[in-house]
Image (cartoon, rainbow, N blue to C red; front, top):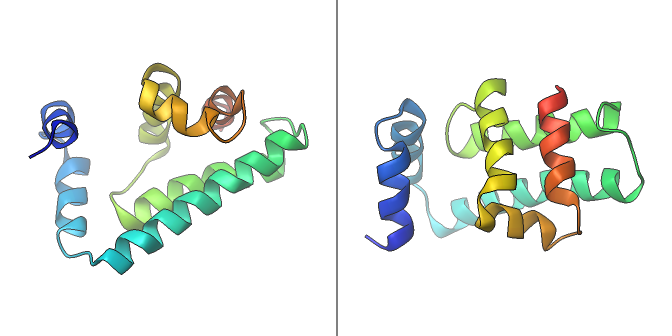
Length: 120
């Protein structure tokens, strides 16, 4: 088990979401993981488009991105409720790895995604 896996297990190992995710991903092929990444990237690109066009976080297009984000997680990993998605939004600001993912796309995107998710 690498450091990332140990951390995940320590933080979320006792949760239903973790068990659900482990159950789903245990059966995945490399093609499944690639498809999951494509779905996640597609949701991120919706945020990038909205942010680049200065759409308000409560706009229909941005909220479609929020739903696409939640749906991709639910489809591939675990049922992602609105409450759980809000918890993830907090990580996008507080965890440097998540923050780097969004900021690596466009400076300011992590805060924008956070705010969009929190606005739902």
